[in-house]
Image 1 (cartoon, rainbow, N blue to C red):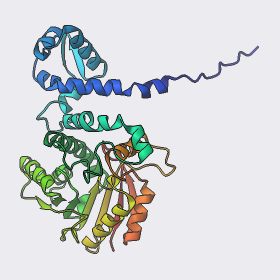
Image 2 (image 1 turned 135 degrees about the vertical axis):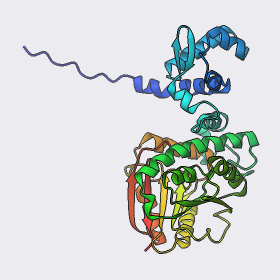
Image 3 (image 1 turned 45 degrees about the vertical axis):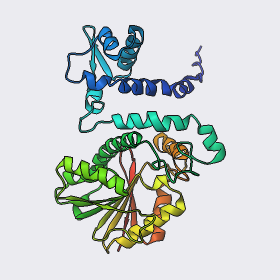
Image 4 (image 1 turned 120 degrees about the vertical axis):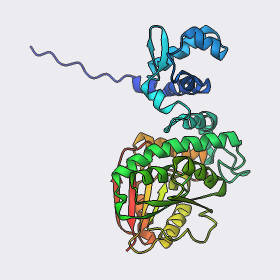
Length: 346
């Protein structure tokens, strides 16, 4: 007599994982806030007692924190001493090339708090990270220290994403790149390192290009990467003289009307034979995922006045309406983007 296989049982485990996701993040943020990973770098490790003494905390929370960081793969333990895992040593130690701590701080100090009022953002369709009646964006009027955290975080995120884009798209046929809203020049630095023939210009607001200029100088690329201050919503035209334009993590921060205006100005600034790259976390065509793009869209709900993540078809439609042709979508796996929509100007 055949024995029937037991029916699959649905459990609340996925809900438990979603409901407790903040446990891991807040543990990471607290450890980073104590400067734990930078302190451990280059040492033989730290005991519970040593952390307690160094951080001026009791041994109970010190032990709990070290245990949790080990469980998350942030630390390793040997002979009673905790030391950085390879992951933490590479990305959570201040001064390292791909330091990710700024992004952690930005999430902790700005975005996490805004998410605490997510229901309000949904009901009112307005951001909670700032008051749109008092400021034009998340950046206006912010504490300079918070802004510094933001740009450090975005630099790390963009640097790692740029490496993926450099492998996915062949920049060999282009010589002059204009990074529209280029932030701290992370993309330009990585792309110029990957393609020695390439020269680039970062176009952004004045206080942002000051940050970019410092990063460019630190990278030793001042002779190949320039900065131009401006505002693509105010300036009549974008800087000319470039055969490739990049919009990386720009369009998801605005509504469709403003995005179409940006794309139109990009088309006008390009010569025949030029191209525009739109690098973003693309929502799938059915609008059911993937999670990074869908949840980034939720972040835009709390952090922007009208922004959201879009599909490749939506971006491609705007490019086509602006005059671009030979529109293609190239998927890739990056930290801040999962694909690039390419439009050519004939």
